[in-house]
Length: 84
Image (tube, rainbow, N blue to C red; front, side, top):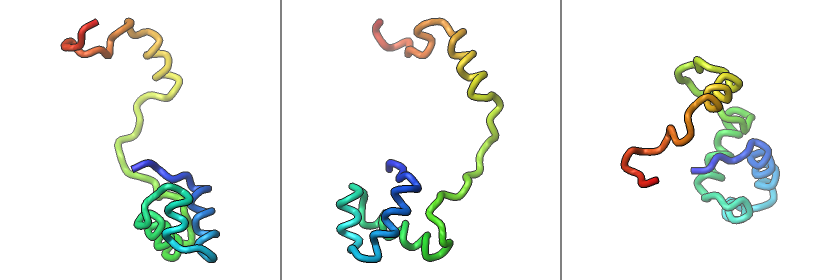
C-alpha cells in the first residue's frame, strides 16, 4: 500500500467536513477504508502523522552507504542465474 503524505492526510481531514468518505477516496485515489482510518486516527490522537516505528538502528549513515556503493564492483547485485 503506498504511503499517503501527511499533507494529503491533513487535506483529507479538512475536506471531510463537507465531503463524503467515498468522494475523498476517489479524489486521492485511495480506498474508502484508508480514508476512514485517517479520520479515526485524527479523532483519536488529533494528529495525522505516523508513529515512529521500532526496528534495528542503522549502523551506517547515508553518506557511508553512498561511499560503499561507489566502491562496489559493477554488477555486484546481479543474480548468478541472470544472463548478462
